Image (tube, rainbow, N blue to C red):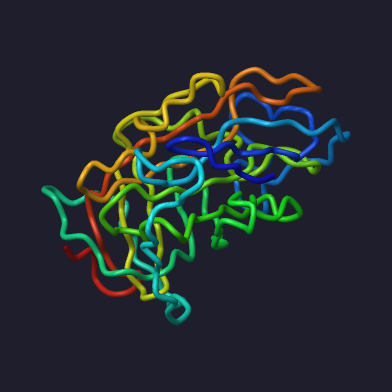
Length: 253
């Protein structure tokens, strides 16, 4: 799977080569390594539109100026839930790389791998041999930073349903928690969950900068064809509503 730049965005080339996932959920009720599902027969490659965070006006030959996260130490072993979003607009966080993405309502606790554009200006997907992984676009905002951050993940792989098999079931008002290497957590509240056909993917709507910390969570969706793959993308729109620490007594703004 890879992403090729287009005007104002880019296409995600999905080559998981599998049957489509079930409607919502995976074996075991969790979409981490424990719920990857049973093996499936391989199919032909497919191409679907997918994520990045270039500036809306950027031509196809350019990428946005980096908002590179600063690598930090591993997150502490202890954790405090930050699932309740804080009222008001929290202050944006200084850069620190993402280490885990949690979506409590879907049972997702996903380790993160950083993704960067390759020499062909394409964004590779997370390793399909590890269906529990999600990919954070490192050349965009870090978790909690101002701008539109992007995280992508497989809907399914050769082994069956993957981390975002149930993403379309997420509802507005729920939260996405992003754990950072510095021990802080960026809490995003979901505004909308939408499905866009790849032939009419609205780059400005999805990737446009809105002057505040926002997040897009993206996976394949829509109808599946063995030759062409999924015809759409599922996009979760969310904005920063809280920050906290993975250890301590609670969230802090």
